[in-house]
Image (cartoon, rainbow, N blue to C red):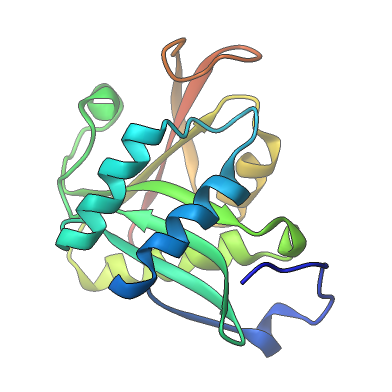
Length: 180
């Protein structure tokens, strides 16, 4: 399902958002590696394998942005309260949903798909009786910073994270969005 070129049709006329299907998880894992790998993202093969095992088991969830039948965006998130301990010092309430991955196909970047995916998770979270969403990014990842800012996330703090960040400041920024 490779996409060869950038499509200039407005997002509202072509995008659908739907839960990931179990029979497409293998493709979505490839999509995540192909489209999400860059100097800012921490995508260890064993960690992603574990993430997709959790998706297959129904522990975590994923939402897919689809253009016609082709996935062009992906967000992966956990169940309420299932937050990595690394981020606990930054949140006062653990009744939150942790968003672990947001990836958009490079041919569709800059069109608001990542922000739209985050907004869909915000809508779902409001129905799940959680207080907030938590997400992280490399401190210097400006594309992710813009996407998260547009979805209403605010930074809680940054910490030195050389185990996951090998370039730039080597810092992770933790952000949150209160659920309305």
